[in-house]
Length: 281
Ligand SMILES: NC(=O)c1ccc[n+]([C@@H]2O[C@H](COP(=O)([O-])OP(=O)(O)OC[C@H]3O[C@@H](n4cnc5c(N)ncnc54)[C@H](OP(=O)(O)O)[C@@H]3O)[C@@H](O)[C@H]2O)c1
Image (tube, rainbow, N blue to C red; front, side, top):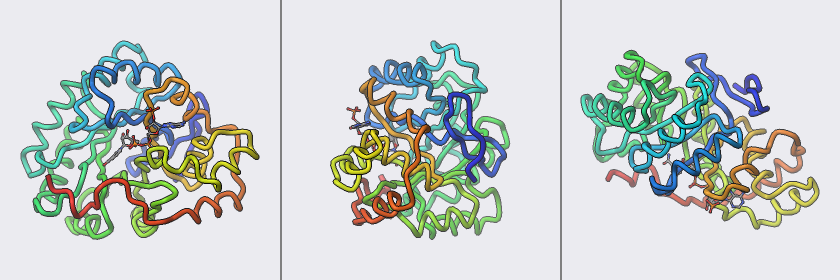
């Protein structure tokens, strides 16, 4: 599904809607709303055109004000937000998306995701039908899911409606979720990696630092390059301007097959966040 290269040489993938999505975006989890405007402004200035936020991050207003101030044409941006668990159900998402759009100052998001399956609530299938309605209304140009395991995807596809465009999952060298990635691929769903740098924990691993030294790149650039060459979308987060720029500068070099294999070998079931079946709150 790897597609064309966008201006500024950010590669892109093509979604099942036909839209293109930048393969490198900017994540704002754990960035306080008051700091989000500055971080997103720095990212947009550096050349990012895709921003990943969520209702529960509490910083959609900061994302929206930075977008507005940037003056960048709406069609040149790709904005993702997510439905929080307590808003799951057949009706609740219809109001939740309007609250998000109001905070973001947008008429539509490019991608609206169900944040977690929250299976204990028994409401994600109904929420998916609400997202289909939101998609049909034009308020989300594409719809998808996050933290969905194959069993949750099966429950959605059993409804016989829209196939999610994206599944955003925890994915980094220490947790590669190969079964989930394979199911995404089989269904034509783009895999998007959250915590792509394992919140910096993998950046001191000798397998990564040795490649970085050989290529004259940073460990973060090597790990992001590993994701891109596996065809995944990444959304690294940073509030540090030099790192924000560094994380986007990943187009001008290639890892060898041997490099990919040595990073693949770092799988250690090293989950950072909750297991998808254990977060219902
Ligand atoms: N769907 C979900 O359930 C879910 C869950 C978690 C995250 N996400 C999304 O994924 C995005 C990224 O995940 P994340 O924020 O958890 O982790 P991450 O992007 O893997 O790592 C962020 C951490 O790494 C540091 N860092 C970033 N670039 C660096 C570099 N070049 N060199 C050294 N350190 C660097 C950052 O520090 P500084 O900021 O101090 O520079 C920050 O502490 C989030 O912002 C969010 O959009 C989604």
